[in-house]
Every structure is written in C-alpha cells, then in structure tokens.
Image (cartoon, rainbow, N blue to C red; front, side, top):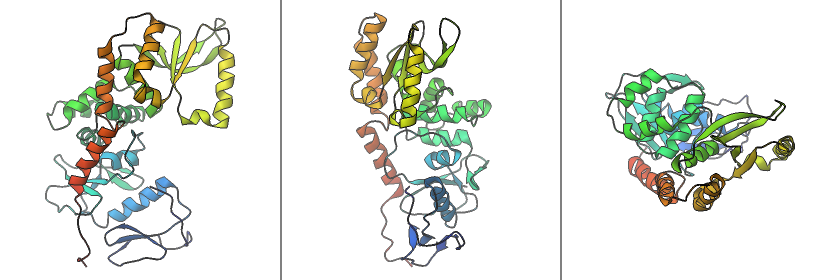
Length: 329
C-alpha cells in the first residue's frame, strides 16, 4: 500500500469514518469506510490504519490471518501480486462481512489470538496453514524461514497442525521440512531452494576465516565440502554503501581459497539451466536434466511465475467476488 498525500495534521482526529461518503481529503478504504488522508505515515503505518478501520465492519471474534496476519507479524513474504485482499477469520457463529477486497474465513479451532500493532492476529501455525492452501512450497519456505527466525513458530503446535489432515497440510509439511531460520532474505531462501532442487548440499550463513584465522566475512551459502561461496545479489547490492562494503569484503578475500559466485533472481527464474551447468562444471559432476525439472516445478507452482500469480489471483477473485454496491445505503 502506498504512502498517501494529505492535508491534515497529526492533531486531527484519526479515527476511521463509517457510513458517510467523504471525498476531499479522505481515502476510501472500503464501501462506506473512510480515513482522513495523512502525509506523515509510512507504508506500514498506513496498513495498520486501514486494518483498524476494517475492525468497524468485523465481529469481535475477527482475527487477521493469511498474508495480512503475516504482514502484521513482520514476516518476509514472496513476490506478491500488486493487489492483495485483506484476510480475516471469524467464529462459526458470527456473520461474515461481504466486501470487495476482503476474504473472510471461518475459525475451526478455539480462538487464540495474539496482538500485533494493536490488532488481533491469528496464531502463527494457523496463518501458515491458510497460506499453504494458496501458496506453493517455494513461497511458503520464504515465509517459514522468516517466521522461524523470529521465533514465532512453536514446534509442538506446528506438529499438531501437521498431523491434523486439514487442507493445506501437505504443502505446509513439505515447506516446513525445507525451511531454515538462518536465511536472512527471500532471495537467500530462493537460492537455497534452488540448490536443494538440483542436489547441491549447502550450509547457510557460514563465517569464513583466512589461513591466519582472521574472519573475512559471512556468506549466504557455502557449498558443502568445497571452497565455493554462493550468494544472492539482490537490489541492495546496488546501494552505494553496500557497494563499498562488498568491495572491502572482496579485498579481504584476496589470497584466500574461497571463490564467490553471485546470483540474481533473474538467473534463478529465467536462466536456471545456465546456472546449473556452471555449478555442475565447477563441481565436476554430470549434468542431469531431471534436477532442473524439479526446480521448474517449484517455480511454476509459486508466485514467482506468471502462471502461479494468475492462478492465485483468480482464486482470490472468486473468493472476494465482484459486487455492485451502488444501490446500497
């Protein structure tokens, strides 16, 4: 969600407005639901403002879940479509509000909400299970790596969910077995999964030392049993400060046995055969096409492919529906 331009000050009443049509100086959150425009809020603060406004439409049992719950918990997310619905879950006995852009599910277990940014959020394992019904294993590993790193996943509660047989458990179990809390970015998670798919064992976030025992840096992935350091080169590496850090790091590596290879997301998604050939040659092993087929299946079933994004958007469109509110009060 974008930071919005505004004409009010911090001292103005920031409460959401329901039931009255407001135009100038206001943002329409949903049908009959408005916020005063603000210019002094970040993207995350604007998200919280909008979700607080949605509480006016929701029963008291409502909790934010799925992508919305993950955002409030501060988890990293895969490459999402531009337009993502708001996800909530309510008790079985409560009404489910119908709004375009809002997906409302039923709580099938006793309500056990947490609070994030002052908003009710579903339990971590329930959020992950709901995401597993839409996401592919690759997407879910990105989220799980972050959730595990934050310490939000309770192993006992997760095991109970994985043994429940509920919808989404198969994908969640596959992703849980592949997850690793050491990953520090979505790109690193994707790079690690690429190596997993092509049968190259790696160790994440390894500290390297030269012959004198001096630390020369930490690498995203170290290919097990070799001196090859494979790293994800994301957009932050083009930042001036990061570029200087990278240059100092490369100088520290001079004379060491380690070889650094950087990979961008485009390499992994659009040129995986080239990357695998390079790795095969470096490791002195035969090229086996079925390894690449495994990776391509992971990508095709994820939000990192056009087909995957279209599939999930069609699913969300069916769930939200397109309703005409022009005749309602």
